Length: 204
Picture (tube, rainbow, N blue to C red):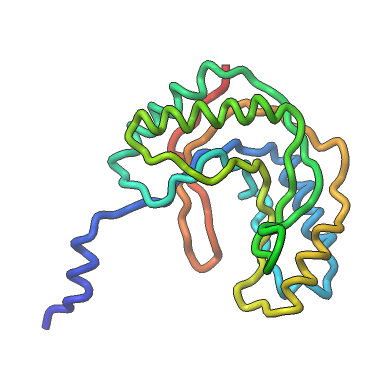
């Protein structure tokens, strides 16, 4: 007997979840891991942490992507990124998204040469549009996602966890150079998301 459901899924083209991001130096990832471990233990059950080695600075989330589009996307990314010079960013305060209502994302902010970061992101946005990719309408708010509130977390545990994180002290002096932009593929499994590099473009 033929499994119709299996047939339906086998006829669907494969799609990948992709995004362009700035990779972080290992020492910055390690410091963010220390921040995670310093989180108050009484709120720990409400949070799912991002593995420190997976923390990155997202510039443009593409979402479901046809693998056949990867060469064109990588070419557009190279056109946008290659002429840009290296610049410095720094890690700032802790916060949550959304700012009001049930917190969902725990993040650490970005400071330093943010005008150059915004300019770089704008070039990427423009190059992707020329490659036939729909523009992203959400405002660009540079940040590092370090954790998320568990879907199962209920009030008031979710609010208490978010508030506790916002009051954490982020170590000062955490700076890093933006030297490269990477096109990543996100792969989901039972352990969460892992990231595969599809293209790496160095800044001039």
